[in-house]
Length: 320
Image 1: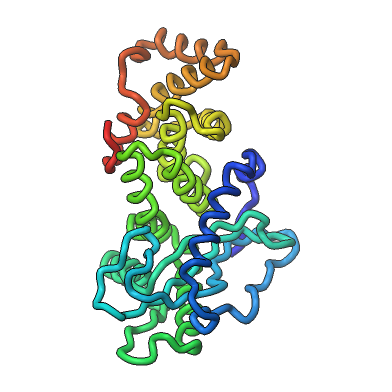
Image 2: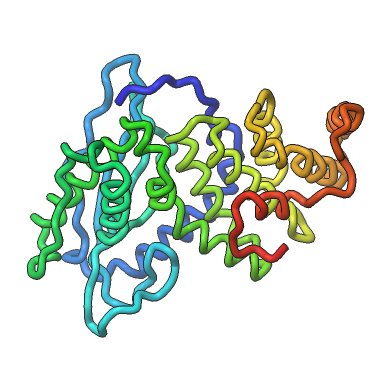
């Protein structure tokens, strides 16, 4: 599915060092849970690159791992299943490929049950849009053969490809939950525990994932971006990437017309104003924007914090 390459490169905007630590910790976790070589299934070939001039959103499952019960699932929580039972984790790679592979692919790990929940939710709400989808059925035996894992991986890739070509499926809450649900709940729990340094990498990965699939100024992208800014700035010492995420959020909010999302703009400006003060930066432009809004009768002082405004739109686990 060819897409216009009109969005800014968020990866190029940011210092890659902010995500290197997360990439290394993720790799370390995977290495700890891999087990033997026989527990790994790998895709034999990569998906083909698009035709010259095209940019294509690509879902690829490059590998799957067989893990024992008690290993960490994709949400970081222990799996509550019968002792000795195994399960398969599929690594879903999301890319925007052009003449060459996406240099900044984003990955999430999902189980069969995640895909099944997504399929059943979409089929219940929009059955007509899934008539051509062949979803792999549950099997009682042979779940861990390379053949079955390969067949399921190919089916899951086609399923996700189909979703993003149908706007009503792509914009459904079921798909958004599939993309970010586990990680967002985990991140919000960490924020609730004041462990922002662990929550920020999860939110960064979620943002990069959504930013590949949805428009720059779509509600889910801007909401997650503001949540990321709040997570970076509510610690006593701001996260090293706080300014970069805040600058991106300010740019994204230019010309936003969604009334619901505009309730985040004043708290965002106030957050950036405080951050600029902490970093010794010129605050003139931010102060002028707030002054202009005040002259229009908009309340610019004494309002909710950015975290409180986010929570009002999308209540999660964070302590306000």
